[in-house]
Image 1 (spheres, helix red, strand yellow):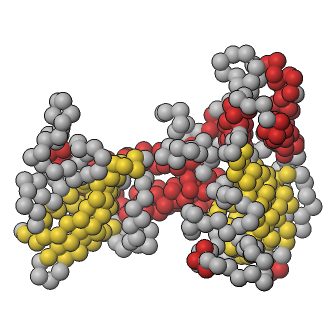
Image 2 (cartoon, rainbow, N blue to C red; image 1 turned 90 degrees about the vertical axis):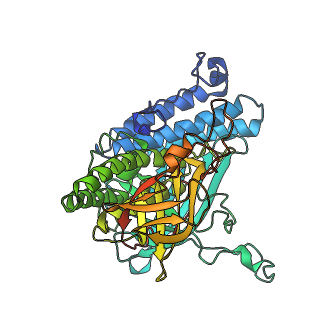
Length: 484
């Protein structure tokens, strides 16, 4: 397994900050002069003590949290090594002091939700409100050095939602004086960001939802992209409330998660429940399929599992976000894992093995297409094929033509037109394009102009795909078009 896919909890938790080896960011003499060596020792000692208090299924989540803090502090140290600014030095030292204090206060056994909860990026404080609700106050700080800071102070009113989660919108404070009307009414989205929370064993799980990526309606919050996370109880606050502290377990052992995505599934009750549902749906579907479809779906499922393994780390540190890829984008990364799981559930639980013809939604681990057929035989198909994690390598499907003999051939006048054809319960899209794709570039890398490429970026990308029939579902009916 590549290092970036591996569980963060498998990484060393001690901070490799001071020393004279190539692995150290700050020279030993400079560390001692600034007192960083003592602060690092305090953090390491406090972490080891806190880890000993945690149950086995929470230890990996706390290890991950410390690994994230280490990544952040090392990034900040690299910036610090190139500057003599006293403000940055003090901010760096304060981050270490704050982490040591947070770890020293960690406890287990809190029965409810009230009190303060902390993680690598700050703290959440919950106070009881009316009708079983809670008021949340967040103070989050992700400091990666220099101008790479992510801070957010916000409040939210959370109420029971009819599920195990409490949820509610973030409280929006006016960014202009009451006597001065806003000049741009469109600046605030229709729906403000929201939060939801519940217990996951000894952790508090919080999930942030941001409807508009460019939303900036909070006065004291530069970024909400680190609100999603696992938070740990700080101190044994006297709580009068009680909460369901069950740990929703997926189908694998959360005391030994193998990948970064596994860790996130263990951290989140909904993701763990999705994992259980996927396992049940897979077992229930197998006996219904003919041999050819079953073997093809098994192959597709293996590829989907590989995609899921890559999903979380690719969106936690998105490489295409070059200016801030080192930042932990926990909101977006969690949402992509959830979306991928729910999309797969839509296929496995809604597998339309009785479908005849071409019409309907078809889905695979790397493609989706929606086919409609009119009474006059006109067939239209829209969708796309993607390459996991490569936002430039997609293949868009836009087809119009006639159904002929149970298949489809587009109206294009070319050697390699778009095609659709049934194969048992499956749909084959552009069967011929695999062969054409291999011939589009010569040995010298030049394009063979006899065939037009069907996909973006690389000429040798093929739009050929084998897809499976899925019944309509809110999780696949809307083609988001974002990368996987």
